Length: 395
Image 1 (cartoon, rainbow, N blue to C red):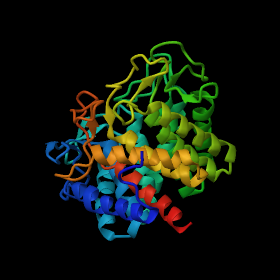
Image 2 (tube, rainbow, N blue to C red; image 1 turned 90 degrees about the vertical axis):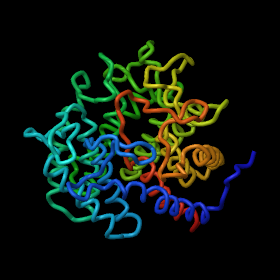
Image 3 (cartoon, rainbow, N blue to C red; image 1 turned 30 degrees about the horizontal axis):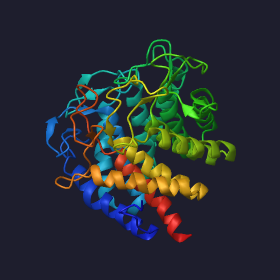
Image 4 (cartoon, rainbow, N blue to C red; image 1 turned 90 degrees about the horizontal axis):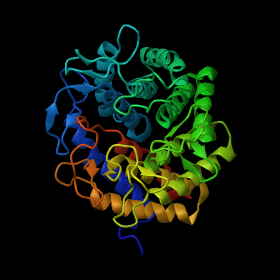
């Protein structure tokens, strides 16, 4: 069946740009804390602030987005104005005396929860790297590099790695830390030109591609034994298709830089495999988590249709088509596009509704107690998709 919303590349470019600038970012501009810096991120889908606490990972993500809008989209100083406030807030309050990034701060920067997640470090480094590009900010660059030196050794042993709110099951190695820090270190390494940082990124990418991604079934397992051994257990059979699809565009970015076409091709194959396995043929959308044998996956609300996997698939499939010009990538892109724009956009308030049940109905938070919404997966996917679409429409 032909997609109802199919457009040519020029039309899709204009649609994405308009959606980003007219529907998504105005929602977040209303939530900027002009007094203290940072962004209110404990909000409902309609933008109602339910807590003024600020999660550090969300502040780092927001810093990345506002800096990237300036760097990649239009050089509009209004983005940098917001980024400046977030950067000041993070620099002043974000780290403890050991350099670890705190988990939650109050609206004015007091500690609500101390460091408890390596992901807070990841997104703080990620945001500061993008901000350092925008402002040529030596302090942001220095703090990001200090973050690399503090976190890199910690990633070698997952038994004590703090990863709230997604704790690693005892005895397993998790895909998530290797995946995100491979990208974070890559972008920091490109910014600084530091071979140590670039090589560490490549080491983590190889862990993803050789220990978690299994050639026998072309599935990427979220949890394996240290060293990569698969485990015949509920945890060991769990995979997250959206997480893999997101990761594979990270891998494309890293391996393109290092001129590894074999790994780029493997990443494209993995995107194809996981969109096919992750798609719900009955109701549409991408399952949050699945098991290889069809049983109950070990994850939060695995049958939910959460917003971030679909946003990552939109960009990854456009990238896969630009890379391969394969029909599967274009066909799957339009299938995902139709589902996404029929179900997630919040026409009343802007941005997207974050969490749906399997049938596509809005539901409360998927991770209990985590009332967090932030500007990240959607604006990043739209922004990077514009870059791909610009290439495609010029071909």
